Amino acid sequence: MIISTPATSANLGPGFDTLGLALNLRNEVEIEFSNVEKIEIYGENAEYLKKLPNNMFVNIFSEVYEKLTGHKPICSYKFNNKIPISRGLGSSSALISAAITAAYEMGEIPYKKDKILNYALTYEHHPDNITPAILGGFCVAKVKKNRVYFLKKFIPNSIKAVVVIPNKTISTNYSRGTLKEFYALNDVVTNISSSSMITAAFFSEKFELLRNVVEDKIHQESRMKAVPELFKVREIALREGALMSTLSGSGSTYFNLVYKDDAYNVFSALKSYFPEFNVKILNFDNLGVKVYK
Image (cartoon, rainbow, N blue to C red; front, side):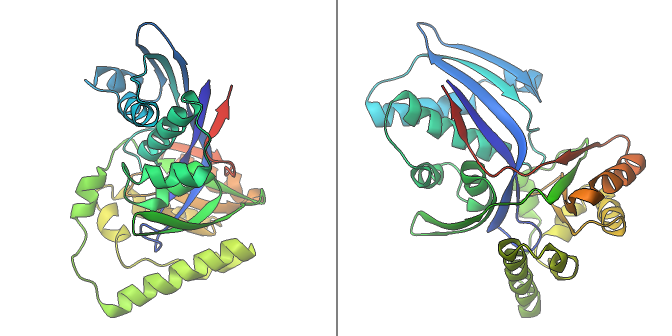
């Protein structure tokens, strides 16, 4: 059995801990029952992950499987990772979503994706990454009383993502530590109105609106100081025609939404200025976590 889960870009600027979308950059894990546990890791950050004393996927999968079935699983695992870690592309949410889905599948227990989503709150308390990781598309989500309330919108193929992945990491915990405890009312209103307009633009597919409404006063500027080159990334992307340009999650990746016909121009300009960074043109993912048997 293979579990495939997409990368995600969360916050989308002003939609802090609320907005997110899925990108067609996937991690896969092949899992089957075995007499002896075996773990193979390939792809992004493989050498680093091999050295860790514990495998987060195996731990979560085993814990959930045992709770569901009453038995401890012994399996072989083969990971093929394309999502870089600590880059703001939802690698942890992809792992959590895949592990819980695998537990239900291997335990042959019927489920719907909203059950996986709510279970994932046990391990990831913010819904902006886990919701699109599981459901795909553009998602707006809110947690209330340990339940995720969400709406999903299919993303058309008329738009693409151009992501800039720096050769530097930003720790999510460190990044949250740079945020203020209190914010001015005007700044809060700016974020509420901007995130509302982003949601409206996606659901109505009036993406041209995004050029004028994406503004964040809560987190981006302080987080971007950890990788100052990101300010130039945003400047170039918007100059070359990006509809919006925002920090992906807590960074360090920068997300740029573009019309399909503008994708190569934005990509070329960014790659030319930042040859040391990994710049990719990505399609959006509308399926979320997938299972192949």
